[in-house]
Image 1 (cartoon, rainbow, N blue to C red):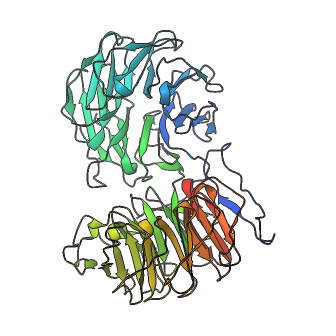
Image 2: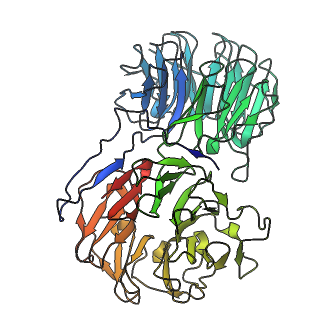
Image 3: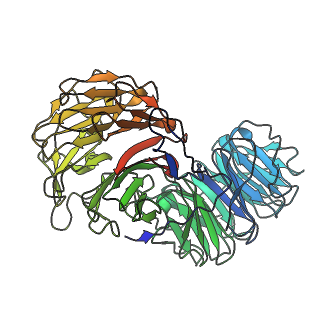
Length: 627
């Protein structure tokens, strides 16, 4: 699959500076730094441009971004609120409105330099807003709510819609004629400015999330299960074939749609799907390659050639050829694991199919395409050969350092060309039974293990050429999800998971022995420095330690209550633990005492990995720290 160069984030003013500090309890020459800041920690839900230069984006946590130079820079605008903001609408460069949670309506008369709250007279979440001129507008939201203003939003009155389904999107083509869509295949229309609303029938059976009219009669509605409906008169609606991919075994939900005229349109969907039509929807074509695997929520044409789309994890993408190709401008996906094969070659993986690669020791990171699913674990046995595991039974491999990734086996197929590469001793067992795989570890280039949901363990003894499912065969563990795995050599290892699960093998996984650490917490991180000495971390500040290979475990006092997600030791004495809300713990006495490091960030931190003499940590919103 393709490799994309990481585009330097274009959002500034809200980025974290790289902070350097001297931590408590160890020498001043060792410093922690933020090497990859989280510039934008929000999901983006809508985008609106009034011309080539002036545009706005809104999202969760009160996020408002503005550009006045055609998207070269996106600057934050202050609303002083932290509500999720669902839609933005501007009539021109000065007059705009935003709607969000708890009946929020914000209005600006100066291009967003200042935002003032307008009285909506409702606490209902408002999903959509539209103005036909500076005075007349509508907003809609949960419970079939539509409210109307004739004074620019100074006052709002409720209109009877005849439905209790949420209103997801609304558009008027004149002061009298308008349309709204929402839950339960809702399409309602008005010919009198919303005084009365009438239902329009379309056989879709799906919640509708977006509507767009190119003129007063040509319109489209989109929604769940890849639904697209089209009308040429505003009364009769016909289903169009969206050709949306079935990435997760069913048609992807479509979240947004926009037409620049009655022929050229774009629709955006789950897993970064972009659909394009140049014939009014008679044919819809999925764009490949996808610029992102993140959900895309909002899309808008600026002209027949230029378009923008936004989505989860701060995703902003841009097209200058009518949607044929897209450039990724911003993305801050949560990272879940990282691994360095040597001092320069490293990888980090995370949600939204994220695979990042560095070939210069972490100075710069490139996006590599490998999957559309959530990725939780990565391991390389050489600078060229590695594996990634994730949701939906994902197991992908590379033999060229990530330039190309391919599935070891299609999760939906029991057998592929040349026979199954993953088998189980019990023929009734299936690779598909493991909805997610959370960890992978290779103690040698030939021997590796992966663990996941419902107690699944897989093992390779031939460097990944074939994989065999292994059974824990313990009623105390049953179908517990397994979250971590660590092997000290090609025979001795441990798997850990929910409900305090710890299982050990000394025969390469042929048999497993249950170990008891005296905790029932979810266990997530594991590390051994030798066959006897190891640590495990988990929920509620849990740290347990063994000196005898797990025959006995002792609880160590962490001093925190946050979830501790990973642990690493570079000797039997010195180690680190990372966890939620930026927690970093350090010990120099094997965990007898743990010191809490000064907090660099508030992001949840998930994994620690070693690169030469350095430690790297990855976490939510794409954060990376280095020690």
